[in-house]
Length: 264
Image (cartoon, rainbow, N blue to C red):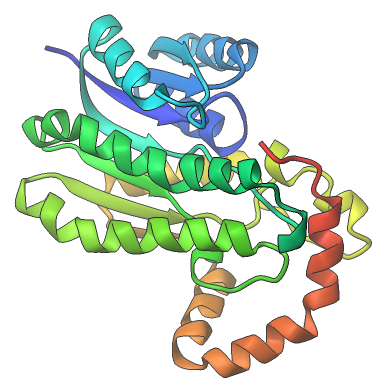
């Protein structure tokens, strides 16, 4: 039975670039996302590079979406050997601006859905000695102001992955946690232009290629930026210093998050 790679959030940004990097290896790829037009365009570009693609459009934040996705993958494609959890919601802004629906959606898409997908595809991943990829964030380490909900979900994803790693490896499968820097995607659109501060955004294609390279190399962790690694390390060894730094940068982050025009 042929095995497949499942990529969530595959229609744009980092997810699309992961798909294209996999396509150059002529992989079988399941593209998952909310916007079918974007998924179909990404699939067409991937097929032109030699991939075999299956498109499944659904919203991972919707009730029953995970069960629907797993059923469609097994029915339309086959066994899964790599699961790349990339879909995410930025969930930025002051806490008082969030409705309950905002909180529930961020927790579902960023944390609950990846956990459920891993649980559902675990028999496939074990049978194929496969790999789980969690596209996490430096925000899972560093308490950036005005991103508290996003920070909470990404920190939860990171810590769940680290705790689950030993269980997964004992069954013969692997886990890669990737920490992309601020990347030029639809989720961050507006930050570099509207924040009134200089913000460097990494190219999505570079990040996507590095994640696939780390996947193929069997790495357990990927930092795409040494400055992000340094920030995370500083939070670990000097949390009070980090808090002081975040207080100093509070207004900058407030402007940046106000300029971000996507709550996906």
